[in-house]
Image (tube, rainbow, N blue to C red; front, top):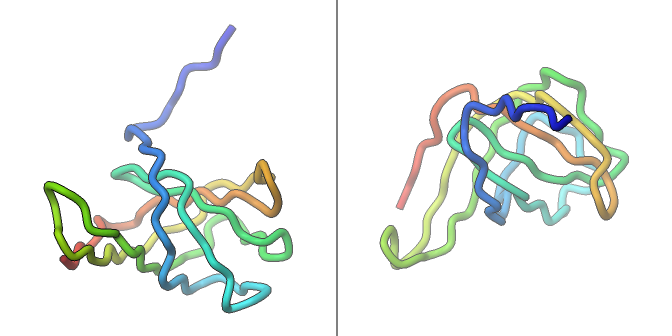
Length: 109
């Protein structure tokens, strides 16, 4: 029997670059980090294996949003804060991190 999905928000497979991430100790500050999916309530991304965060860790971040038809011809930024609610092994390497937003994203276009 399939377990019911308990998510409150619909996820969208959206690959946005994490231009800034504070609150985690990374193996390398030059890590190229990208979201795997984003919803109105949170996001998921992958980290190098050595950087697995503890649950409840507070983060601040900035996502680079590319230009797109219907919302911005020049792209912009989405800034926010959140907390780590889940970690799991990533499909390729490292660890997947699920973050719940602690306040709505601030958009700058």
